[in-house]
Length: 302
Image (cartoon, rainbow, N blue to C red; front, side, top):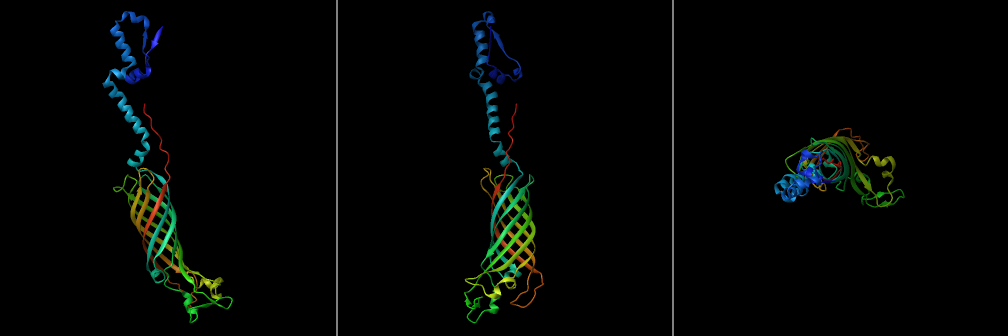
């Protein structure tokens, strides 16, 4: 008859004996002194309680290994530059410069974006912005209003005053770079981005009541100042991805330049404007991001 000593503890104490099992024959106990047998027994069954130095050499490294495994995700975000896609939503306030400043004042944009961040902190993205504002400096209908400031509607009555707004769209393909050095981890830092895209803007009218005949169908096109063309953008700012993956944002100074032309005949000025306009805005843009992180594979050591 034989007794199996504590195999798990023995393997922990002596890695070289992983594939071996210590057996002690009860029949051999007679040939051992009581003190010798007890020492052998307790060394096998209770190696940790009787040997503090062996405890430090075995359990402490194992404890550190467990912490490393369970905190792998946090360390990967904190210590490494990762690759992941990003969904973003942004707002900006812009001040017009150049030809655009003759038609509009300050405006706002809201939009959405999709980015791909690489391990080398390069940014590749597409961004859409909806442009809106109420600071319009012109009203092309001023040329056909009555002396009281009214237009005649389709029913032959005076229409109420019209409200005038700015509306538009800006679509950009962008590339950029995150420069490490500022922020909670290597995925955050100062950013430089540039983009190329398409810019569209117009004067938008809201009528309180029936529209006048001059503001219906194709006639309206001659008063909307529809303008569009290719555009560029540049921005400098800061992008943050937190270690807990919950606070992800950017803020930047952004400049956009458009090389645009008007689409329609200007009824109020009785002309075609075939010139190329240099439209420009300077603004502050803030964005909130939702990164899509991949599950980090856990590593095991034997």
